[in-house]
Length: 277
Image (cartoon, rainbow, N blue to C red; front, side, top):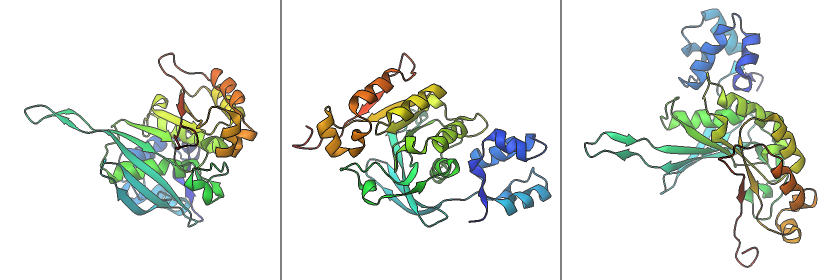
């Protein structure tokens, strides 16, 4: 694909490229509020600008291959990237719509979107299917962001509807730290999806040095640690990365991670019968 992905750009980066700079806000509005799939739809932009944007950028870096619906209301998406690789993302229905006795809506549905950050994964956890396929490449910020944009559009979720994000799909987010952090900023931009950072959670297998680096950025995001064992010997069997980042180093990094007093770092533990139960 020769065209660049416009979703890779923060609003500030777009403002530097597009003049006058207020056009960047208009473009962001079309992409993230109106879910535009072509520049031709952006009728408040000059025709020449729309044509130039179309020559240089794509609005559709992902293609939906399959959607699987579960009885619990969740939907799993398989997306194809421009190079033929595929990634998965899942829309999770956390709470169904509630109604008053008169039929009016009391509470809207609550959604969480689980997104991927890499094609494949280097970590190699014994219980993870993604690891069996090996590592192919990192996703760009735009490819991460587009997963959510496409899911929201496909499910008619309005731009101003709050959703939660969890970086718990394919890949180790902190192994793609630069693009993941950029996607966090794009997601949280008030002119974009306006998904506040406290609604975003990064899940990691425990790259302690990257946890420390992420913490120093003070993004205000939530952190989840994929632990799955309470001693190094067993954890190394389940998660070979523990040889480089043992439990002690993870705990030290977590203690230094800045987090709101009302929140906690989440520890994830997959219970495997006769192994770590």
